[in-house]
Each structure stands twice: as structure tokens, then as C-alpha cells.
Image 1 (tube, rainbow, N blue to C red):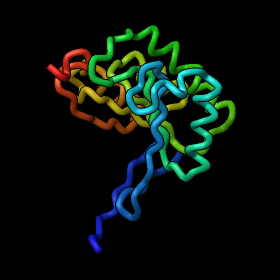
Image 2 (image 1 turned 120 degrees about the horizontal axis):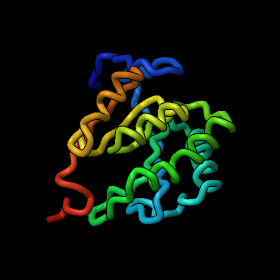
Image 3 (image 1 turned 30 degrees about the horizontal axis):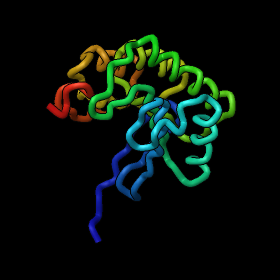
Image 4 (image 1 turned 90 degrees about the vertical axis):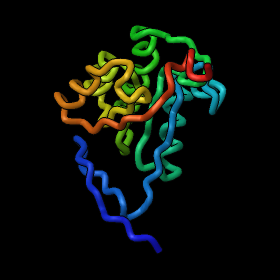
Length: 159
């Protein structure tokens, strides 16, 4: 069996230990046009309930995305992304979700607001190509930043 060297990621609520076992990240898309769940968790109550269901099923981390990054998706803007995201983060905090929350965003203002609302990890699908100041937000708040890769934008990635 392959042995992996353990690695620790410090977050506000404690430490994520990687390498000893595979961690499971539950993905919660709060978009009306998600390609993975078809907008099934777009409304507030179903989103919050699904987060707790993923926690109960064994998820170690919850990753929330309020902007669709499916091929061809239109840019929704900062205000709409915040309108979708913040109530869900507040609902999770009020009901005391016990697993860390990661927020999938390309925008520094959304990242800033998400951290203030309880997110502990940032996940940027654009790899800082969309808004490089997102890195400054992560450094300022001392939160881990996951960098992904995407060709172009959701609107252009298939061209």
C-alpha cells in the first residue's frame, strides 16, 4: 500500500490532517444551473438541509459554490453571488455545522464576505486569473487557498 506523508492544514476551527486517510469534500452548488445537480439545492432550506445531510454522511469538509462554472455559464456578478451565498453561510452557522466550510469563488469581495460569515478555506477555480487580489484576502485572513485551473472563463472554456 502506498504510504503518504501526513500534512497539516491549519484552519480557524483546528487542523485538517491530510495523508493519513482520504478526506471527503461535500460539494454544495447553490446555483439554478449546476451541471452536477441541476439546481436541486438552489433554495435556502434545501441547501442548508443538504449540507447537514453531507455532514451526517461523513463529509470532512463542505465546499459551497454560488456561481456556476459549467461550460457556457454566464457571469452573475458579485452582488448576485453574495445574495446566494451569505444566507446559506449564516444558516449553517446558526444551525452549527461541525465541519469546515470552503467557498468556491473567483472574486475577492465574495471571499472577504464569506470568511467573515464563517468560511475557513477559499477555493478559486480560476487559479487567481480572474481576480488576483483573492490571494491578498487569503493571506490577510490566514486561510488556506486552493487554486484550480480553468481554460478561459465558464462562458468561453469550450471555445
